[in-house]
Each structure stands twice: as structure tokens, then as C-alpha cells.
Length: 133
View 1 (cartoon, one colour):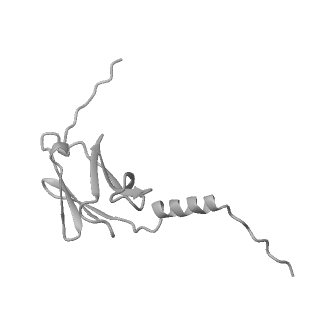
View 2: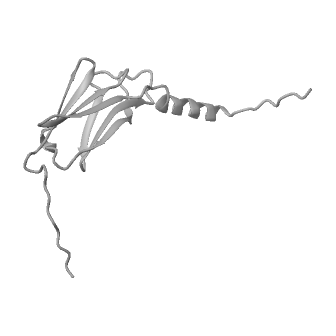
View 3: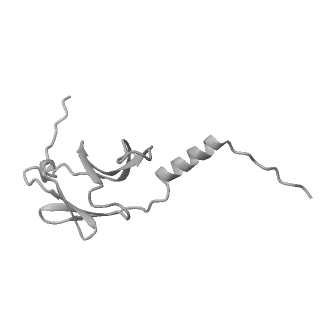
């Protein structure tokens, strides 16, 4: 009967695997729902284990980026972590007729509600472009 070889994995590789698993694994998928009303788009976001003040939102180039900052490399004696890594929760491409200046968000009933008003002046814009010959 053959004996299996014992594989030895260096400790630093194990530490790296554990660190990456902590950052990337062990989390549930967020629930993101988008509804359109007459005057706005409404986005409802639920993320298990994420408290009300942890969701961050940025708008850049007609893209809504939802993320949370996860602390990393916190020393035991520190009251608060000094280093953070963003954890993307979702990205939503915004239509050109969303009023980017007036997007708002509220937290209630264990979820975030993001309201993106529709700018009626930009809605339905259409223009024919003649090609020069």
C-alpha cells in the first residue's frame, strides 16, 4: 500500500490565503432592486451584515457605484482601523436623463432606498445627425 506524500505549505502562503479569504469570501450577495416610477428610478439595496452608516455611494460618468469600506490590517491597540479596502456591492449604469445633482438616499427598514429623479428636459432627447459627404 502506498503512503500519500505530506504536502508542506509555507506559512506565509497560508497567511495570504487566509487574508484573501477574509477579504473576498464569507459574505452574502447583496440584494439590489431597481424600480421605475413616473418621476424617478428607485433603487432598493439590502446587504446582510452591513450597518446603516457603512454604505457609500459615488456617481461618476453616469455610473452609480455602491460600496462599503472594509478595515484591513488593524492593529490590536488601535481604536479604529487606519487602512480600508472598498468592497463593491453593485454598479448601476444611469440613463442620461437621470438628474444626477438630486440623487438622494435614505436608510429604513433594514435597507437603503436611493431615489434618482428623472430630468424631464433631458428625457426623450433625439436628434438626427446628417453625415457630411
